[in-house]
Length: 166
Image (cartoon, rainbow, N blue to C red; front, side, top):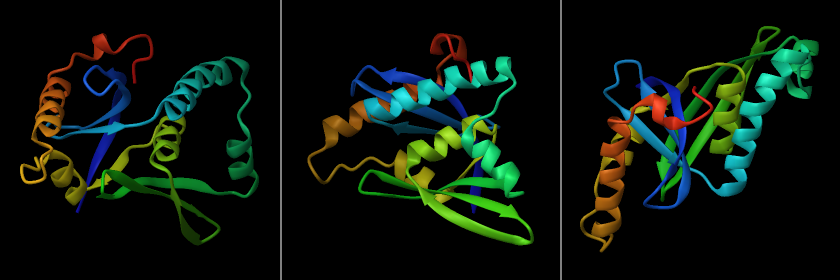
């Protein structure tokens, strides 16, 4: 089963000192932090800025023009699994009576969801795995920090996220 989530915010994890994207479901019961590297965060911030510029100029980007030309639409953005701390994601396209799915990097999936204002479908197993603590592998302090951060995220005020609200 999949849960529909939206990109709730984009912030800096003070504990891990890494950028993080926060997904939340509509009921606010589930949160999913997705840590990304600095280069990916620059692309994400660039998308936030260019979205504003594209809207003002009335011009789209290459992908949007290509999708229009091929009469394709983006149907869903999905996070399929979480293995060894790495998310697997896909984007499903539809059009001309044929759907197809492309596996993408998690940051590309998030940028696509932002750009086209799509929800992110997250497999329930991903949510379960992301919330579990691993006490057996000596990572307790790191996991405790992660748990504290997840608790912090769940109580986060959107106004505290900075200049680019989602």
